[in-house]
Length: 103
Image (cartoon, rainbow, N blue to C red; front, side, top):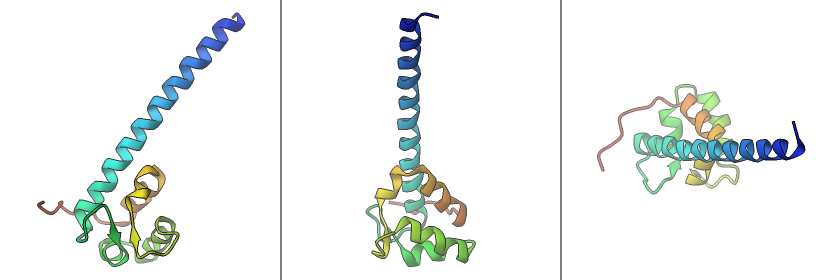
């Protein structure tokens, strides 16, 4: 395979991988806001520490995940977390999802 074909193949692969990453970020954001709708009373894309713990199935694991999602100890998980699919998945694992409250 010529070097030009290799470069083109590499560029196409890079473009495809970047497209997939942005889709993952979009899905992560949707999932974060689904969690907010289900458990947050405060609104505005924020989940308080109390709301998160109240929805948790595993309280010990919830404490660990909460600390990762609120590293500055503000008392809230904010939508900054929505761009980190790993943290959103961890949040989903420790809470019990309920029906979203009506808006």
